[in-house]
Length: 286
Image 1 (cartoon, rainbow, N blue to C red):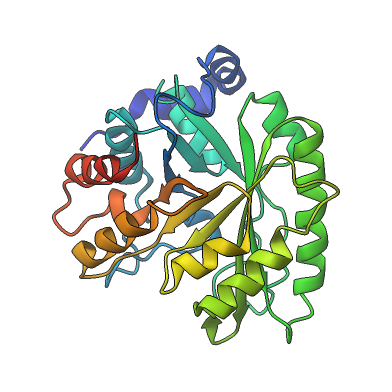
Image 2: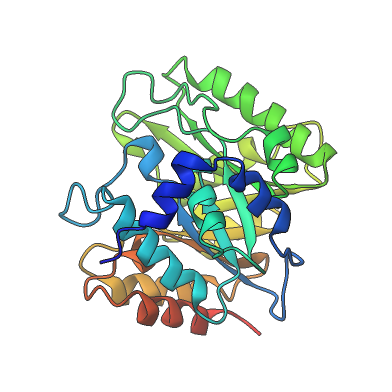
């Protein structure tokens, strides 16, 4: 396993090279040859969510995560990355983000299991930095819990971020959940409620994209919005074949513009990242 000594040395001695690498990154249009995108997600660690399957610290090694990410991003058909600044900057310094869409994760302050989880502060990217680093958009998590006072400031902050990103012509990707301390409401009704609240946030929805889970009733759910929608590929547990089948079916629905997948592709049961990514690429439309 590589130890990334050169990366560590650059981080310590030449921090200015992060900005230089961002300025030198070859950018691309949002859409490539296909009408659907595959974005690799790696913003879980910043919220303290490190588990995959039955392994509570599966994503705890940054060296291993970077190795898996560089494999995933090198595969044909992968369009980009969704991550926090630390991971984006590591991959910029490694030269792994040329010709890839890069979405910066913004609010990671609602740490998993915290008493303040629903007051999800914007502790990572802000719009000014996303613009300055020449990224392609920003992503925010929006958990909506009627019995949690922290939901209100989160809604307000998400609305502000959507407005600011739109003013800069950048994608505002919002991931809404109708939620509570017991977990997310993943019924069609719960997902539809979350979508309707989220798509009304901000002074304009012109640049808003949705990121929603694949659940039962996706045909009904996709009737709830006209916004471009990416499917969230969560942790499939011990049944990746069933997860892949549900993704494949949902990708055929009108308005679905692709997949955002993290752990399912980066930490597959057989650890073959390239094969898992290639399977996801093959699901996308022409």
